[in-house]
Length: 320
Ligand SMILES: Cc1cc2nc3c(=O)[nH]c(=O)nc-3n(C[C@H](O)[C@H](O)[C@H](O)COP(=O)(O)OP(=O)(O)OC[C@H]3O[C@@H](n4cnc5c(N)ncnc54)[C@H](O)[C@@H]3O)c2cc1C
Image (cartoon, rainbow, N blue to C red):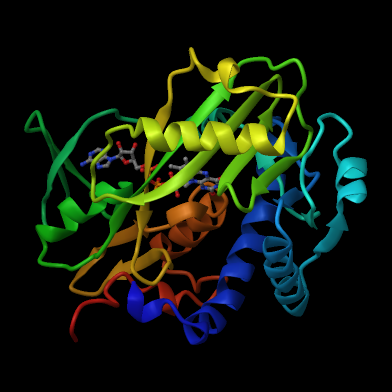
């Protein structure tokens, strides 16, 4: 991770991540139209309470412009004009108009429906081991053979690749979310709270507040201190809310599959040519899900991939 925390690696990766994100955005739009679920295309606000934070984000906006992306640096009045539904306490921020948001349940429901419509079958089971690259054995001992097996088990994918002697370095990046069922005031734009490191997403009547990135292996215990940090930061940026509104809510915990270079693992494994790995998307797994699916389909069909994904090679951390 330390070896990749430098400007050179960011410069090498930003074009690919932009192209993956824009292609995925387009596929999200198409899927939401075809499967008729809401995808809100109103953009995202990065909110800053300190001048230092705002200066940093203005630089990010410049970098976005260099990549051909839209970004508008806003003062507090402009922020409030863009978000009339809730009072914002921030010195300024950046509006990224191309961002979208959705309810992950709607998205997964749409995918399930699409799989079934196309004749696919969804089997809920635990995979215990791989039959080399010819299928899997479940925890009940059932063997399921396949022409191609796609390993997309998030952080747990590494338990399966270990069996092949393949190094797929990943750490769980733990995060929490809390969802208010129907707050009296609900912002209509999603936002990231710079100094609070919190993400705020309206989902219909609901409002989801999420945050933290604890590098934790596979430990899913809940830190009460970090949870209250998320709530306090949110209420500091959105002063019409108060911490007592969150007191009865059950937190959700998730592990982001984080690779050391911040790039997903996507591709075939040369030593096991019928296995495809698709994981390691860290904070971008939902955003990049549709393009990941499309690229996996192209790999399965032995078509040329629509984007050059050589940098995502799942064996890149293995010695040749
Ligand atoms: C708080 C929080 C907020 C986030 N916000 C965003 C966001 O705004 N936008 C975004 O794009 N991303 C976001 N993410 C990241 C996103 O959730 C992940 O990138 C994404 O879930 C990774 O998808 P995945 O399918 O690779 O892994 P997972 O979502 O972890 O899914 C893997 C699945 O494989 C199953 N599995 C694993 N091993 C086995 C096995 N042996 N047998 C059977 N099944 C198995 C697991 O049970 C699981 O269902 C957020 C994450 C967190 C924690």
